[in-house]
Length: 163
Picture 1 (cartoon, rainbow, N blue to C red):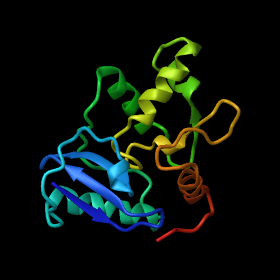
Picture 2: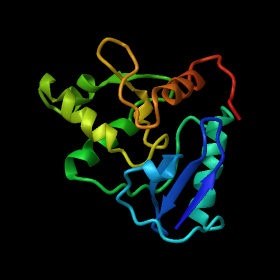
Picture 3: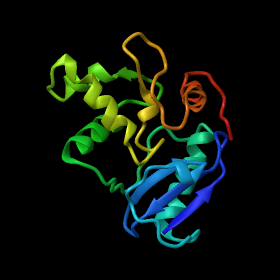
């Protein structure tokens, strides 16, 4: 089941298996690479209603940490990377290499972290937008670098809400 919400960075489709959020991705939806089953639209399912509420609060500058049941579909390695992404605090950034180091991997594993990051099926809620290149530049965001910049700007101290 799924729903769509409007956001300041474009429409977001949120997908649930009925128990947890399995995907969240930006329009255009036909370009999204999501392995979670889509099912029927259900704007009133409690998991989707709560996810939409929290996302709106995030865009309004009222929420810094999501509290939702999540069930992203991926390999064991991807799951480890996605869990590491969830540990990046609101308003902070890290690099692919730093995540690799946190996972106990050599510095050469930054590319593998980047690939797993790029396959994150739950955009925003699993904050892959908080990962930047080793040189401090914005790199590799499936939602587009312009969106990534807007999200990082939203999380900067003193910045105003988008919604």
